[in-house]
Length: 67
Image 1: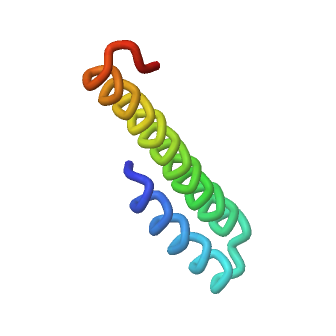
Image 2: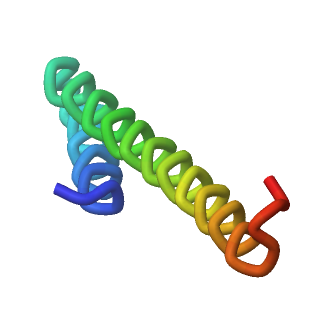
Image 3: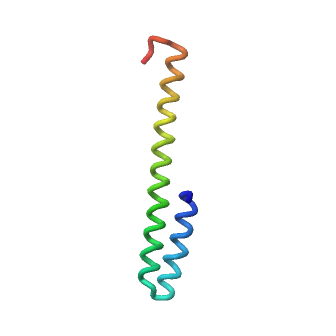
């Protein structure tokens, strides 16, 4: 599942768990929310690395001696 889906599903589970007093469901919700946040951070890092690589490639195309 995607980061948004995991976070949304986690929030719903957590809220229902709190409302019903189901601590296990609440914990599952917190875990799902955390899973979504981890995916988000991983995607951000992946995007930053790709942007850095693209910037280096862009510089090397304009000036082969620039690195």
